[in-house]
Image 1: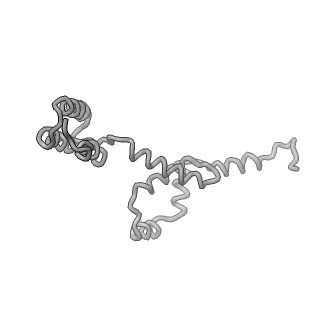
Image 2: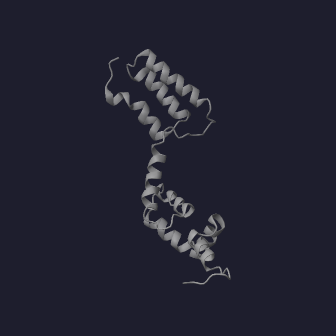
Image 3: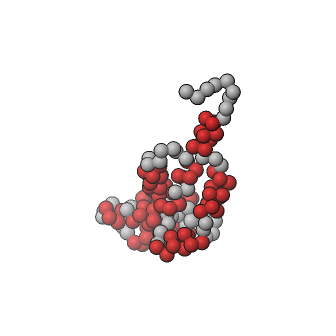
Length: 150
């Protein structure tokens, strides 16, 4: 099989960037059948795999085809959480959303003008419950009656 290394990665790159859906499948099917001089065995294996995987997808649905995005997000999460003294998984985990957004000046301005901090606090309390710090304060401030603070 005589192919260029750059072209050998086309299928992988296309699916990595666009996910797996009917449109990606159609592009890869065209590419593999008429676009490159792949060996027949390689072409059949790739098309067979894609055909099998695409059969599990409903119309209009796109599936994540690689874990690169997830690995990147968890890397950002780990980097962010390493700076937090108390590991509040819920609140810190919600920061992953920030890694997937294009935070423009207008978006931040709109959020600051339309969302009250008290509403965010109420939402966080409802979704995540008490923080680890508040649980510790409650636990250590509770009087047991038989102990004295040193």
